[in-house]
Amino acid sequence: MPKVLVSDKLSETAVQIFRDNGVDVDFLPDVGKDKEKLLEIIGQYDGLAIRSATKVTEKVIAAADNLKVVGRAGIGVDNVDIPQATAKGIIVMNTPFGNSITTAEHAISLLLSLARQIPAADASTRAGKWEKSKFMGVEVTAKTLGIIGCGNIGAIVADRAQGLKMKVIAFDPFLTPERALDLGVEKVELDELLARADFISLHTPLTDATRGIISAENIAKMKTGARLINCARGGLVDEVALKEALESGKLAGAAMDVFEVEPATDNPLFEAPNLIATPHLGASTNEAQENVALQVAEQMSAYLMHGAISNALNFPSISAEEAPRLMPFVKLAEMLGSFAGQLTESGIKGVRIEFEGHVADLNTKPMVSALLTGVLKPLLGDVNMVSAPVLAKDRGMHVETVNREQQGAYENYIRLTVITERQERSVAGTVFADGKPRLIQVKGVNMEAEITPAMLYITNEDKPGFIGRLGTLLGNEGVNIANFNLGRVESGGDAIALINIDGELSDKQLATIAALEGVKQAKSLKF
Ligand SMILES: NC(=O)C1=CN([C@@H]2O[C@H](COP(=O)(O)OP(=O)(O)OC[C@H]3O[C@@H](n4cnc5c(N)ncnc54)[C@H](O)[C@@H]3O)[C@@H](O)[C@H]2O)C=CC1
Ligand SMILES: O=C(O)CCC(=O)C(=O)O
Image: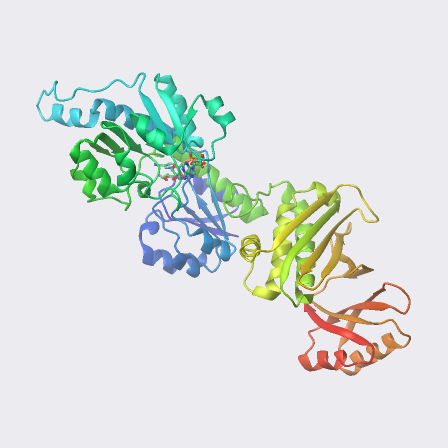
């Protein structure tokens, strides 16, 4: 039974869902904050369910010997080292919509709180002062809201702000003009947004491109008296520059839900005037927490129990229905890749993958990942289905896929062509009704071979007596033949022998076979 650790404060709904799905679960919501304890116990778990307190660092991943999936009950995954997880074959998934409305509502709450200085007015009134003239506010009607990052949350903020009769402008390089039109927002460049907005609300992920987007330089470009809201990530704002802008009056106010270092207990911003601070409350409503807990537990269980993948940041989706149908083809793809990878001795420039027949109708992305895993493993060793596409891209390998739905001689087949500096070599396979993958073509030569853990691949001259000599030699070497598969282009030309053997060949045995008269190439293959 797979075992999951919940290391942050998730709704206990998640625990029940894991159990209902047959997944064992330890609910230890304080472990995420205890780095040493997490390192000590993470090796026991197949899954890790987190919010933002747990930092899934390179060290944690290195210690996570059994980990298959990290599930973020929320949106931002900047607390997970995704490249390291990917390299180790760990799926990282999030719940991209479960807390969007709640977070957008928090941004709007902060916007109105800033406009009317509600937290400060509340504290003053309860302190017995009646400072009516001190808390003169601003109307938001007809004011301009600048949204930086107009994705799920930004779009909801835009909608709610329009309900408040604000004019909404947005900076988001990935926002299409059609979507902007749909949302009723004006798409502008960053400098224009900074210059025009009365309120600015941040809704981008934290990436290299967005880190420090609210810098001293960009604050200088804002309207004097503008107000800033950050319900996205602390790293987006230069906190020292913001403090100075609040002190100088350049900005009339700022509301921060998120901070560069969290938990933020003594942030310098706390001394700045006109600052509203909340402790990363954006997603903190019962509704949002139920949504994300339920979703993350369902998604992680579906992966651990059935291989179904949804909302993964480092792997294509596979639904629970298609997972069993895909598996034999994923297996075939990995074997074809491995077969070709073991036979390739020079640098691979690219691969062409042809899917023909029924298989072309299926979700072929996981097959591509499996195939690349097979190709790269003999060359790189530490490769898995999650990391293979990234490694192929990093190495400048061109990956071309062709899907043809019409059937040929086989109901379905996959053909892989490996393109190197010197040549193109192809290998094709199919899955028969028994669910077992078979090789059906090697370098244009037709044959029908099962793929077993140990195989001997031989190219030879098609001459009488060769098979007898080879059989005798293998017998003399004590190598038991489980199956002998032969194919040739034409009589007397080049031939291929693919021999399923029991046990592996030693280097000495392989050298003896390679020296046999008529052998052009001999390779020991392992699957
Ligand atoms: N305070 C809180 O509790 C919460 C905070 N968040 C944060 O909010 C962020 C946004 O969430 P969603 O809207 O769901 O994400 P999303 O992915 O739907 O939207 C992000 C938008 O930012 C845009 N973007 C990316 N790079 C950009 C750049 N350099 N400049 C301008 N725009 C850029 C993207 O095109 C996208 O439209 C999350 O990444 C997360 O960090 C999310 C939930 C709760
Ligand atoms: O889990 C939380 O409270 C924070 C949510 C968040 O920041 C996110 O979903 O990106």
